[in-house]
Length: 85
Image (cartoon, rainbow, N blue to C red; front, side, top):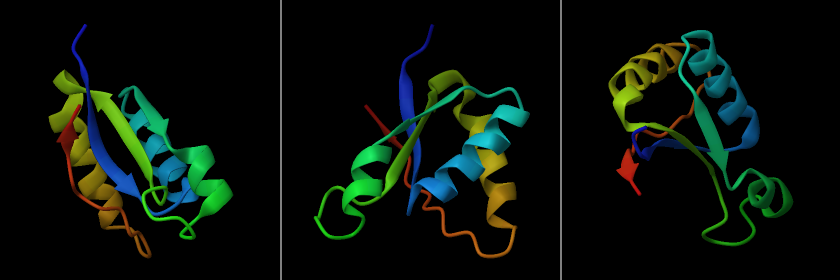
């Protein structure tokens, strides 16, 4: 099994769940990180803002394509900043 990498950071859990649902519909597994902290503190505390979405490294290219399609939807503000952990 490959390692997980950060696909993106969403502004809030709502956006993260929308993207996670789109990934799931394409058969791509994902995990959310920082969701609870973002819900509790929102933008009040620097460093806790945003919900990270992680995918398996071998699914990263497909996940980026799904994310790109999600960007074409109105009113999305998903950031494209992939970072390996």
